Image (tube, rainbow, N blue to C red):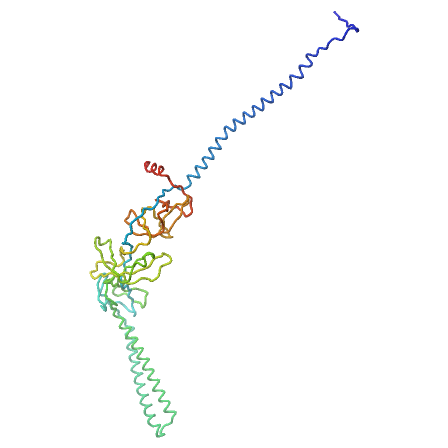
Length: 408
């Protein structure tokens, strides 16, 4: 059925419900979707941060731990004060009082040798004989030349004397007199030259016999019968040492140079003679401190009439010295032996420092330090081999030391 609208009646309200609700619902949904997206992004970002942050923290902690582990860990303790010890023990080199190689002064062949190694000989004892036929013939010829020169000189002198006697009577000329006078002088000079040549060859023939230059021990024989002998230092025939008195050389630390006096007795001990003490005498010093080692070279002479001591051995030299400054005791493991000399490591504000020290008495386990450290120093007890001056180190705490010792 069709409904007709009356034009006189008021207009009907338009059905606006559907046209107004649709545009309002769409923006609300978009806003809700945007908020949800932002929240999702924030959630994902938070999860990412929560996953990455522990890794960053762990990496930083690992880096810090690695850096800490790279720093050497050391044990440091103050030095133990010690009592001054008057006996300073130093190693000494034992040498012969006189040590001499023996060479030939004339060429030839060895006829015979009379002493072998270890033989004790007196001064001027015959060691060997050399045959020198060439030198012998030269001596014979030189002697003949000398006889000829003497005859010519004698004849020239007679002629000169004769002319000098006749010149007063004008029986001879002055010119002839001068000639014979000059001939006499010339032949006299020839005689002197011939005599010198004969003397030279006689001395060479005297070298056919080799004698000991001093009393001592033959320590080497490098020749045998029939060998060709050359002149000079090309080949050593014998080697001798005077061992009735031995020289002992040692280097005394410069700080103790004022404690020793020339002429004072010095005790010496030797590993080859345990329990025995040999008394020597300090005879001389270098009178100068070696700038490289800061030590004073001293010589001690020790009697060896019984031949108990051997040259080339090592002695322990006992000095009575006056200690300088305070004395401290350290374990031997704290010492550092390098080209710079004897050193120890100390720690100050976490930095290692190497200081040069002078050593006193050493009993094998502990050593006395006379100079170089003070009671306030923290000394590294067992320094690493690669420790360098100025290096950063970490000092272990007593609990860490106890834990390390307990673990061992």
